[in-house]
Length: 332
Image (cartoon, rainbow, N blue to C red; front, side):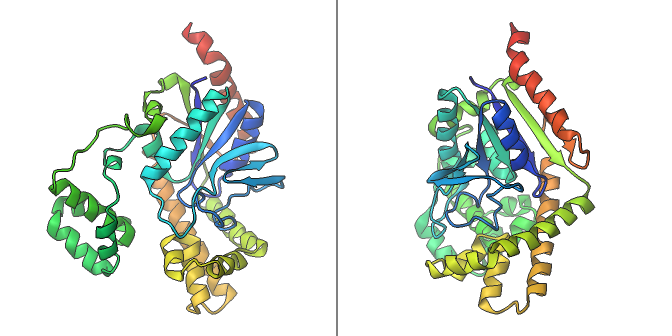
C-alpha cells in the first residue's frame, strides 16, 4: 500500500464530511492538513468536528470520529510555535504508520502551503528556527519588520505577496531565511533527511489522487456565514475564554489568526456586540476563502467537483474506486 488520497479545497466545502465517507468505503484514515487544528483546545473555531453528528473520541495526535481516526489533531500546546517544518516531519511519520498498517492515508487539506510542503517538499524547511533572532524581531513593529527585510533582501521583499507583507510572523520568517542565506547556510532541495515524509514526493503519479471541492463564491460565503453563527452557538466564544483562562495570552491568540484574532479583540473589549463580532468573523473568513481559491487554482492534477451538484459524492466515489481498485491492475 503506497497510495495516498488528497481532499483539498477552500473552507466550508465539506472536505472532512466527504473524507470520512471515503475512509469508511476504502479502509482509510484521515490526516488533517491545517495549520491550526494541530493545536490542543482550538476545536470549535477551527472546525475539527464535521458538519454532521458523529461519535467523538479524543486522543493525543488524533481524534476518532465514528470509529475513523483523523490524525494531526491536538499535537501541540497553542502557547508553542508549530512550524511547517514540524508539520511535515510529524505528518510524515503518521502517513508512514498508516501505510504500514495497510490503510489508505487521506490528507484533508485546507492550508495550501502545508499541503505543498508535504506533497512536494520545500527547500527552506531545512533552515531551522533561530529562537534568539525571533525573540528580538518579535519586539519590532510591522513597519520595522518591513523596512528590515527591504534592507537585507530586496529580492525577498519583492517576492512576497500583499498578504505576506502585512503578516508579522511571515515577515519574521522571511528575515530569518534571508539572514541564514547570507551566513551561507546549506539549503536542501528536497526532504530526504527529514523523516520518512521524504517518500511522499516520490509517490508515483498513479498512486496519488487529488480531489478538489469548489463552489461559486456566493455559495461559499453563505455557507461560511451559516457556519459562523453555528459555531458561536456551539460555544466558540466560551472556548476562547477558556483558552485565555488556561494561560493563552491574547497576543498569542491574535497570532493564531482568523477567528482567534477576532475573538482576542472581542475579549479585549475592542468589539462590543455580537453583531459586530459576527460581521468581522464573516469578513475575515470570506477573505481567507478567496485566498484559498487563488492558491488551489495553481494545484496540478486535481479532479474538481462542484459541491452545488447534489450528486457530486457519487462522482467522487466512482473516480476514487477506479483509482483505488484498478490502477494497479492497469499497470500490470
